[in-house]
Length: 269
Image (cartoon, rainbow, N blue to C red; front, side):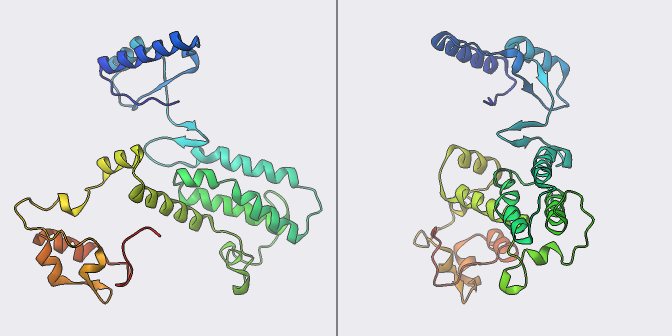
């Protein structure tokens, strides 16, 4: 379990009181030697000492692995995802030496190897280098049935990821999978109210235009959907300037393209 807190002494003491109450009620003790606190690497040592004194828990360094996903800040490094790559390689090693047909390798790649990164890709966004590394391992196994095989690759991996009717094998490109999973995450963020979506919205998003428009600016509350301010798939410029302050209307015209056709409403499908 991860507990988020400020470095305020009162907050830390209240958290410890709750944990002590849990221990008294359940009869279970929290093993502080197996627990750790994580702070930014530039945190002053006096603050670190204060937190350790109040909580009795020692500091540890990022990254950490939580539910199979690396938790870190700053740059995404390949070493953070090495456990996944090692897991894939170990699985391939277990098949090495077996007489596998091309069809058998296709099944193993499609249903086993490509399924292993799904949990990670649904939660974090690894760098392209990590995904390309996985693709390289898949391709080596497909063409040589081994890890690090040197057999000639008669087609690019992107070609193998094309549908069968277009000359491919039908493998999934993990780049496309990652994009689809993050689109789903974004859709859940925008359409399903939750504690997580509320926190992310408050921290990173500006919110609805309704709350950005000055109170003394008249708002047409009959307009509920984007398609109502478009004409033939493009913005209705006059309508935008009529409804919004000039700076907001200009920002929309320059930065945002209407993606929905006129007949489609802005509702979840």
